Image 1 (cartoon, one colour):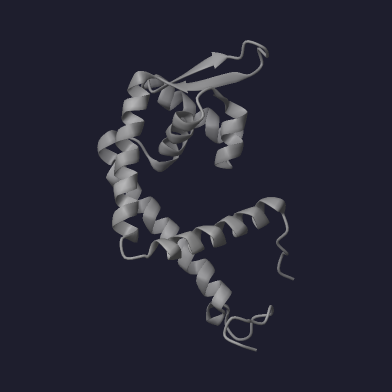
Image 2: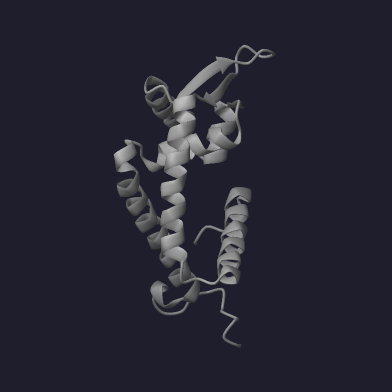
Length: 162
């Protein structure tokens, strides 16, 4: 077995297994990035879940609440908690769909668009600072690996431990 091949059954302690180590490293990096982003966004009085919504509305104007929840991998209860906060601040607006009155479409207001652009600049600068030492090809490799993991998890193809 070469260094790229690893037995599918870990031996010893879980943290000695390269896949476990990789999983923990990704989880810790995500957690630290969220904490750092939370602090960086504090002057704008928004949190990362708000930014996720705002960026998606910036990209997909008129998206339905249901589509947004699906993109963000959150439940309706999360949406029903966060959207009114953004609406009350005048950052988003909800409108009924012309064809289907049961559907609500979401859009940024001018103030929401301005705030989103400011927040995206903060997020982009943070990402640049965090990854400045990583070569672009390495960033692409990591992104492709994470995209494969996301696809596997979304497809429900992961096996549960026995």
